Length: 301
Image (cartoon, rainbow, N blue to C red; front, side, top):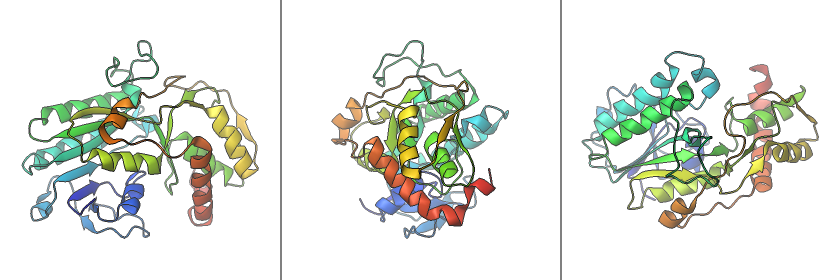
């Protein structure tokens, strides 16, 4: 890895993990990454004026600006467009003239049609982009990538459920449960039944950086290729925290069973995930436990 890679969105969920793991990647964005990140950071006021990058020598881009808060996006008329579509369009409008070797952005496995897909799900399975506003915004993002594909060689990563340590309050089940488990309050989960493909952030970061160097453009699924139930995650976190997690048995959206076919990313990069669910959850819990007194998430929920 060298400093000819820039990353937009280094203050979010995945960005700090990538920057911490690869200190030569340059951060670009309005918000400075967390204090423990020592990478070079280039501040930008907004994506309408990226000329501040004109004199910077870079040829690879990781684009993490966007929102995965589907709960909010699905209840607001234009949030999906404002957070996931317009920023991507603005960035690519500028980057089309930069002669990039690779541009990587991120959508979701929720695009796959749950009524027609076959497990494990590969990149050729049928999609249903009209499920809700969040999924539709990710579909439009993929269409924008296609629009610029002749000028910007790109990989669209369709993420499974990623998890890992974060100081942010997010909608994802794992960090939410850990934040609750570290609080003085009762811990609940909507439903323990769903079975999903959970990928640890550190493994995701490694795969993404490897994809920067491959001779391929198009869609790549990223997960572990394994399925884990929410119930199993609950059991592990109960052991780690010593707290009981109550199943509310609420109805939940998304596929009840999902497993990624990761043969394409393995073929392209040789990558394979290093962390099983118990290992990844333990690492996540221990690091977030160290942040609990500082963050006190339960006071803002």
